[in-house]
Length: 220
Image (cartoon, rainbow, N blue to C red):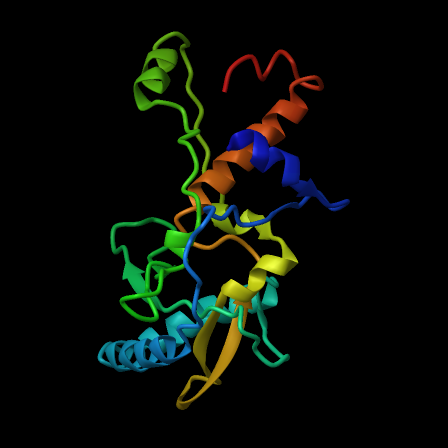
């Protein structure tokens, strides 16, 4: 599957990597899930209203993603291939950076008979380094360095033709009585394939840099 992935992975002139969603062969038809998404939005808003400033904090994340064009407002009419993904907050009080994260439920089903978006996608093989191997390598050198990629999943762009299954609802202008439709342009947190898309993109990126920096990329 990794070979199939790198064949379709493109890189823009600006350096962004863009990937399509790798679908399972023979999966069932993915239905819209619009009604389920709207119902879940109503429950989400009621939950956020129970805590002070939670709607403001939630909306701040989405507005920042709009500003960075991670998500975009939908202006065209939906077609039969559109899928709406519900979402929810995950709070991490002990985190030093991201204390509130929006997680998308791509496992939500429009009905018992129809599949979820995650059920239509390949999970992909595990590409991350084994933790034991990392520990052993860290014992071989006097200094170990570690780094974190900010909003890592969101650094991989989704191909335009796959973005119709990445729609979601959110309230407009922080008014619970109105809503608007947004669409992701990047891989998102909650998509079963996102870990593979990120790991595969990083591996290919490092492979492409090996010739330029051979002494720094002996192993990864």
